[in-house]
Image (cartoon, rainbow, N blue to C red; front, side, top):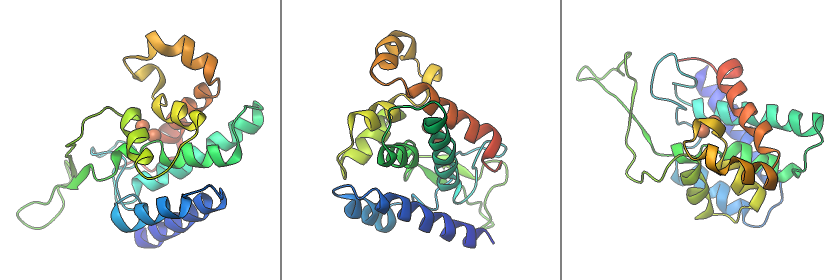
Length: 190
Ligand SMILES: [Fe+2]
Ligand SMILES: [Fe+2]
């Protein structure tokens, strides 16, 4: 059942990305699909946290897309349809390759801590998402700002930068809310 869901989400995400028609999108999709764990990675390492299971990152990313797309329409925000897709689906690209299965000697996955974080490039959270994707695809300024600042007040630099970020990209508040609402209300726990 989980495999069906993972494949369904993979196909949905690839279709959304390709529908943007953006230059270089095929290369980005090819990289994500063939060289990363983007469609199978969890979204967190602790049971009870959002998306702590295979495919959790993809589920979360799609939920953020659904919520942010609604908010852009509701509040008439200045974000293009392709930017909604790119920013939503890739805001947590920093998690690619970051969670390693915590396999016990018995061969089973640890129930207490199913994944361990291995981050050999600790650039930050949103910062790393921007960097990782930019290695393969040209992001717009709106996408960069949304992805970089999606943690909002949970980012230590937010207080200092918020006046400028909020002015340059007012939709960042809705994007942060979409991320929070997805993780609290929509993503499958555990
Ligand atoms: Fe995040
Ligand atoms: Fe997120």
